[in-house]
Length: 598
Image (cartoon, rainbow, N blue to C red; front, top):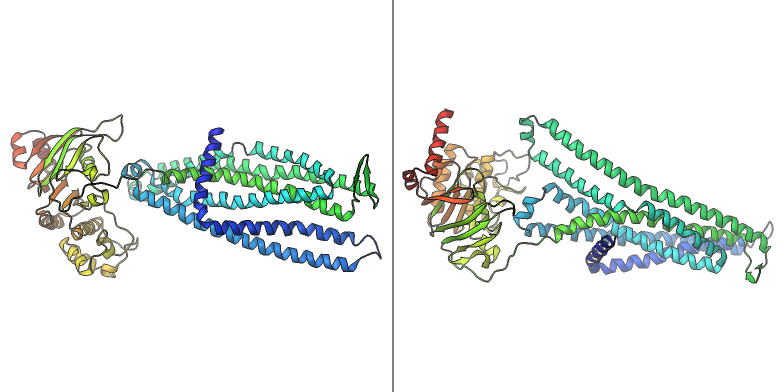
């Protein structure tokens, strides 16, 4: 329990840091809350005076009645205006907080290392940024406004009730904890239920996104039924947890209202007794003397007793909202607090030659399973390096280490004699151009996607890069050419998407290249042209090529043959074939497989 309260206190403190720049909205909300409470409480006093001005037939003080009715109408208008302005302040504050939280969470996502993205379901991360942020503002800020107004109403009504009749006021105060006790018992465990609810929501979104992304594969293997059953299972858990959470929270309000109704009825009966006993004069109870308790005052007291207990109902609802908000806030701040990549560095490379040394490198994705152990590779500037080997041998891992998507556990990698961890990260990554097997294109124009990373490029430079990548011809056949927006309505093949990614790298013109199965989705004729373009762009540049088709890397200056995270052979194609080792068997098995497939 102490840890839970400490966690919630920390979350509130952090959220207040986001609220602080918008103190004007907070001040406005406080002022209009006070006005709303004051004029709400003034109403019963005014019509109570109006009632007392009509003691009987023929005894009506019309001037007092009209004044009180007019003042009551004015107080209603002020209440309406102050409540409207209060809502405006709270809503403005909520929208700005939503914007700031989402901005910080998204900015942190762009700064976290690849390890975080690889280890978290994308749907769950999206849920934190979209749904959980809304829950925070709905619960904490709007709930806090209700809480503040409720507390003010309670304190103000207490003062007035003690002035009117402190005995009945004491009775109300003594009985009120019953309502709080009922609310505390019911809402005791809602926090854990709402925590489970938001976690399962993230799991549901993650599964739906996964199925939509791989819909064709699901249909191809007739796994629709399995996907539906899995969705139904998660949805059923969400339904059960959500039902339990909402049921528990829904019990709070009617239960407290029932207790408060009993208190109001008790006050009404006691007030009637006081009215009868006072007989228009003072009421003496032993040594205690009270002022006359009229029908008008009874009306005021009943109204105040109801207004005094009503905020407890609202506060009980706020408690439920707060529990949900704390659960969501913890998830959002997990993203914001995720450590980003270390960007700084003290060494700079003015002109990159491209000499790379990998010295005694050790790396594993998890401590339980080692992958790369004592890897040593020396690459001369301008060399074309091919990395080959069976699936899972560590080819892509080596690329991840070169790009610093992951850092070594031990050892070091140097470029031109400088440890890559000493070079500013953004500066280091600009040294590489990278084409992956999976192409990434945003929902922008073709020209924008080619110029991604080189925003200052002119249209002529963009078109020249497209021609070099052999994609200019199909771009011009699109409806709007280079200004075509790549949405779901634009039908371009996977190979064409990859050609656009290749054009992007050609436009950036980096000193070093990484091609991770860059031509895997391109037909043979286009691949021959792309290989020609690659030979042109790789001339004089250190280039790393991850390849499964060994026929594409026969002219490599150095071939690194990997297996189980280690380089077991290295050399040119001819030298490796002469050794008749692992590479020899791999090469022959590939061509033997191709022949048998025929």
